[in-house]
Length: 144
Image (cartoon, rainbow, N blue to C red; front, side, top):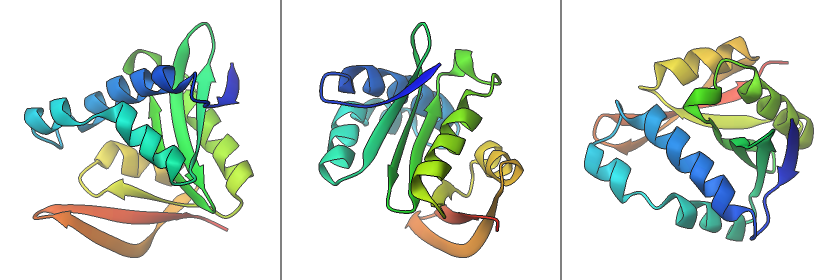
């Protein structure tokens, strides 16, 4: 498995991984209309234009994606068929090495992700932000 920085040429591969994994992870959290409407390629382009660094985890095929900024980790997604193999942990550890003391946000209703980040050395900081009625994002930071 290799982790490589996403370039403009590799953006379609990263967007395909992101789209499939994001839709699956959010299918119980968002409306079907919102899931279909979300342009994952445009979103990743915006992230890159804003200075975020995107990385793709690839074996025989691309299986995971992650973004990061200064001390910030985001958009960690692994294809559903490739989950439970350590790929998410591999991407997270890589990002933690790159970012130093990192923070990230998770939807408060995404109980699977909340538990996974706790198992991987993160704890809630107490900071949270309301995205819309009933939908909150909570911040996590690395445990010392």
